[in-house]
Length: 388
Image 1 (cartoon, rainbow, N blue to C red):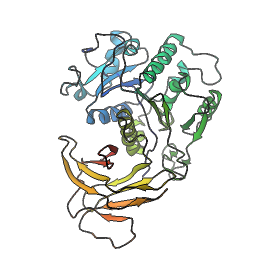
Image 2 (cartoon, rainbow, N blue to C red):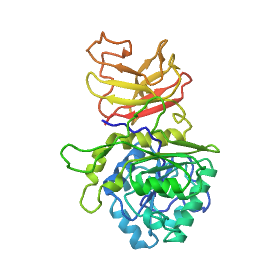
Image 3 (cartoon, rainbow, N blue to C red):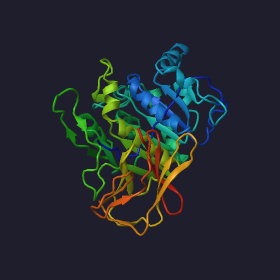
Image 4 (cartoon, rainbow, N blue to C red):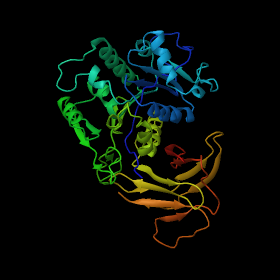
């Protein structure tokens, strides 16, 4: 299974009352995320991203293009499953999930903003050789908001076509490397904006049952080709090339999209959360694979060019509901070389193979639903993965 290694920032605005949004131009505090949706998007992708942030206890705000009128807000809310509006009170004292009008959403600051969806960026931003946006007022407001979000040291992420607002916001320095799914128009747009496209490889399906799969896996461990993270005065921009626009929104293929890239969505949101906390974003070690249930394992990979001494670092199995640490593995005098992997396994099976196989416990360390945390020697959480 492929593993996402790109950092991602998403802007999310969800349905509900506007409680807690009474002070324009103010910040909504930590653990707030804005999801910005195009007019054309997959319901299944929204639910997937939404659930990831709910599991991380974020206050979530959702908005979309042309969601100015009450009827448009109601239509957007109708596409979100009702249980999301029946959650416990959020950190701000209001609903956990709130749907908010498009321009109003840009009056506040969030610690995370995510842009994603299958379409509308071609319509609102100057792609395909256009000299200017079709809807200047919206694109200008978006550009202003993203610039302000970054200047306030927030995190901005883009999934798939969500790269367009980031590209045209003017926040990325010339020459910035931009991961991208291999779409000719997108590659040309990145180039025209003075950035350097880094296309992901593609694997055709043997049965031709859907679009080819974009490989989000590390292809060359020595140069980390698919890790895109741009630091801007303490802010971070994270890009994930999940090719949502390759899946038509008119034929019910959203389920296939989130199935094809299930792990990649989890890793993307993990990267966003870690970046917003100032942890995990700069480490060269990633959780590459997790196998849960009996006789499971966790694989760590060094994506960098230097060896890393893991002495005193820990893997933790955590109950995602209570936050209780259930099991801990502490590395003892272990150095992980560039491009190398170390596998920490558990269960009754005992390996007598390579030195990079380390035994954790005979117990069931990672039951379904558990969370894996990788913590450095100072106690800072660096990487997080969920058992799905």
